[in-house]
Image 1 (tube, rainbow, N blue to C red):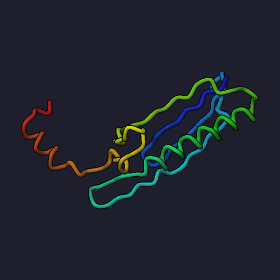
Image 2 (spheres, rainbow, N blue to C red):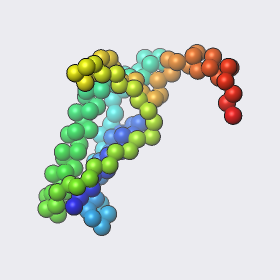
Image 3 (cartoon, rainbow, N blue to C red):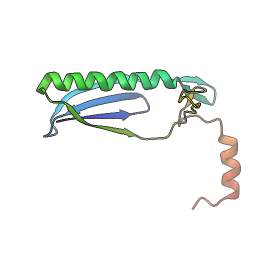
Length: 118
């Protein structure tokens, strides 16, 4: 049994394959592409998802080649939130919004003034 770990990082998406003894069989990383415009930090959600799927497929194939075992688990990790709005067909309706986006800074300041930060 192999385990694939996917780290949805801010700068890179990383995949690693481990065997049952948690010995690493494969490690790969691909950069995340952002469109930045002043306070806006967005990304192409379909491109991002396609990259994640491709990396998982490559990791599974590499694990199989190294020890002949199938993938039994896929673990996803991520540090921060991003927003992807979907339509009824589960397709993005606009670019994804990264946690680094600062367009709501004014609203955050207004809320902080009203609510205690303790």
